[in-house]
Image (cartoon, rainbow, N blue to C red):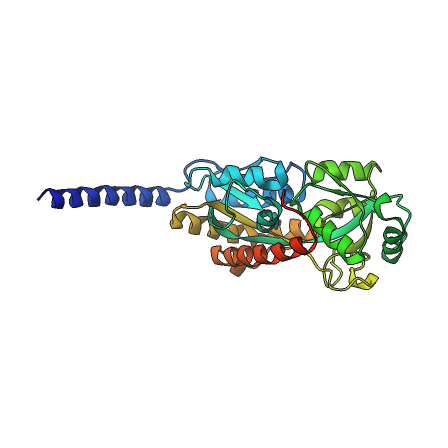
Length: 327
């Protein structure tokens, strides 16, 4: 009899918990939602996030706040979200660095796959090879020759370990079989500031962070990392046009919640993300930055989960081949 009572009591507790979770999901959201960007303000991921957050705010009926938690190549911000309450009110918008962190860091405070619930892909942003406006090489071919001839005398900025700019730099140096002097910064914003000021020779960064400066003539653009030229920068050649084959890199971004978040909340957020990405404002703003929203079929938990798993395996091989030791 006591056993039966215990079973009934446990069932009631479980039922109450389930009921509470269901009510919470149905009432979601009833307060502001925070999207953590694991990089400094003003960088490319921050730009993408603020555009998406504004559109999702309209759909969710609650303010979606962007919080910048930079440092350690994006791992500090990601770790903060992994440890947050799984209630749908603290999210993470991260780029390709989510898949490279396991190969770049010997000890992560989280598991990128196990500790997060994917919501959906957001965009895939092309990269640009850029330099200070008075850098000597006049063309992509000239740049390649200059880097090969001068090697470590060429300074190359990036936003730190695991940043998209570092990954692009690794591929660039590998493609040219030449080592440059890397100069890491705490975010792409400070790196761009020094590039604009002429303190650094070069960097490789996303179009969301370079297009306006390129069009204003404030920095010099040598190439885009796409198979074809992009509409917003029609005069900038592809790497292949400069004789560098198989150099294609797009920085994908995804939206995540902590693992354990109620599926109904994940579905609500995914639907909101899909609606945001089909809005004219987001589409036009992305186009001006040289990128585009993913189709609705990719702004889903399954699509992001598949992307993360595949890219994690891919970059583990690339980073190992590049001889980059885990930090």
